[in-house]
Image 1 (cartoon, rainbow, N blue to C red):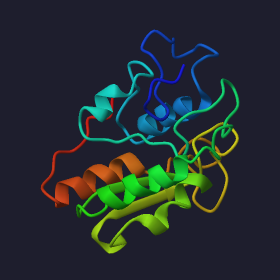
Image 2: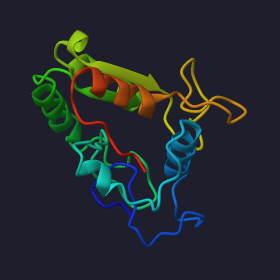
Image 3: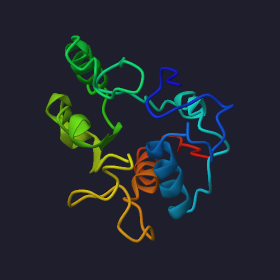
Length: 163
């Protein structure tokens, strides 16, 4: 189901399908909680077209085996991408989960960026840590989509149309 963008799935996967990943289901829930409404599909290419880079810490996996290719050398490439991108100031970094947060140390000049951290939006991690992606009770999200757009506005950049 993967299509090269973290969390994204092809348009033809129904939102209520078992093939629709729990992470994306929780991202959709967070968007709604923040007042953006719901995604029309699980295809997040419209985010990428607006400048949102959806990047996993491992860029491939065996089908159904999360992190199965984590030791194939992807980390050094991801670090290089992060270091290069972070040379440009005023970016928003959404670090969801422990793997993503372990990459924070590679962001150059972190005080020149907005760095948002929470648990991973997967069904297993969504409520974990001091910074949950969605708070228990499903009434409040981490607010990352709203915070990102507010920051982009202060930097005189286009906001993201999330849904």
